[in-house]
Image (cartoon, rainbow, N blue to C red; front, side):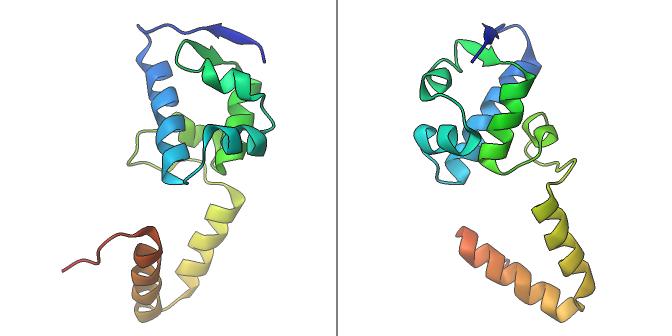
Length: 118
């Protein structure tokens, strides 16, 4: 995997690397599992803190994390350029009445281990 030298003065690179790590942990993936899912050599992931991957490898990492490439570049509170699966979930949600939407949110929060709103 061709790597470019990591530039600590570039906040965008820091954001991408932080997002990769945050998403990996949120999905409960080890670095090895993420590498396998993205078809990236494990040795390349061990250098992420020192080097940053090129665009093709960022695409592979996004695929391994099951997110869009744009989500690697976004802040934690935004969701640009959704994947097909994410878009499908939103379309299904929009087809539901308010009561079913609330049920789905409660169920999803439970699956994610998030306490319901009081």
